[in-house]
Length: 114
Image 1 (cartoon, rainbow, N blue to C red):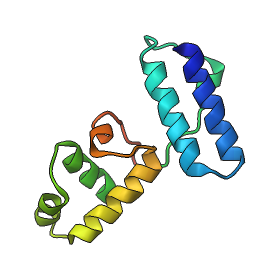
Image 2: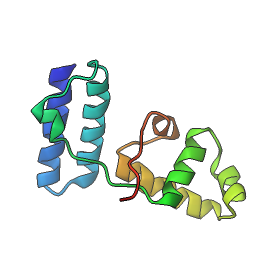
Image 3: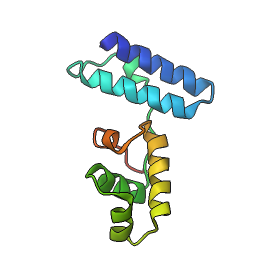
Image 4: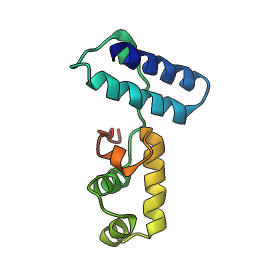
């Protein structure tokens, strides 16, 4: 698992160098998930992994509600937004975090805005 985590981290760096940021984030996410299964092991290769982009306050709010299982319609009603706006925010969150579903959102610790 540790070797796979390092390989994914290196792939993330390679994607980043090539300007493929979405692929870089997805590879970094894979690296992070694999590394978590290695009982906290840290290596220089893992330390240099591509960091995810921070989420805005609104993106974090929507992410939390989506991870709890609320539909876009329910989130829109709760936050007084359109469903399209909620879905646009979720699209941006997925790209920033390198995930592709609401289920994956529940496993991610999104970075906060700096």
